[in-house]
Every structure is written in C-alpha cells, then in structure tokens.
Length: 145
Image (cartoon, rainbow, N blue to C red; front, side):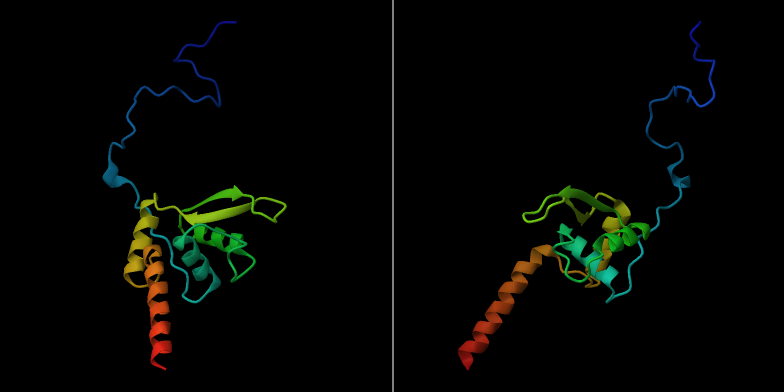
C-alpha cells in the first residue's frame, strides 16, 4: 500500500495548514464578543454572581440556596466566564466544585469593572476596612453610652 502525499486527502482527515500565524487577517471583521448579561438585583442568581466575584466559593459556603451549580450554569449561559475545580472538604465524603470568576476573559473583566463602579459589588480588598469601620462604630457607640 502506498502512502498518500500531501495533495491526496481522505474523507474526515484535515489537510495540513501551511501557515504559522495565529493572528486573524482582518481582526476588524470579527464579530464582537457580547457582554455578559447582568442578573436582576436581589435574585439568587445575583447573589451567586456576587459570591463568585468576591472570591472562590463552594456549595458549602453559599448559604442562599442549595443549587449553586445551577445558578453558576445560568451565569455561564449568560456570558460570564466562570472557572472551577474540584476540592475535598473536611467532613465531606465526595469532592465538590469550587467556583470563581475568570478575570482573564475580557468581556467578563469589563462587566465586573463596570458593575463595581456602579456600586454593585464590594471590592474584596475593602472588606477588611469595612469590618474595621463597623467595629470602630460599635466601640464608639458603646463608649459614649
């Protein structure tokens, strides 16, 4: 049996590409990547988005609903880039998924940044300052009485 040359092809076999460029020839003609859809405020899906934007979260940490995976799947369908991995928690028999927002995705990063500017999320770096401010307020209120 003779071996096929590059000019011969079989059904279902891709032909070899002869260029090595990964850049698109006409990048301006590529369709725009749609921005992620924001969930309605006050919904469980909105709480799930806020939780994964704040940091890595598992079902064990998410107290709002026992269906975190379903809401994360809805967020992915709405265009949010969500990363996940499997972890084993102490006291749990089986591994569970841990979710967080993938800020490497440009549309997701832009949506998170614009939503933070509108005051939708608490920036995780400022949570410690918020806790200190509340504690100081309680001390001041308790000291004045």
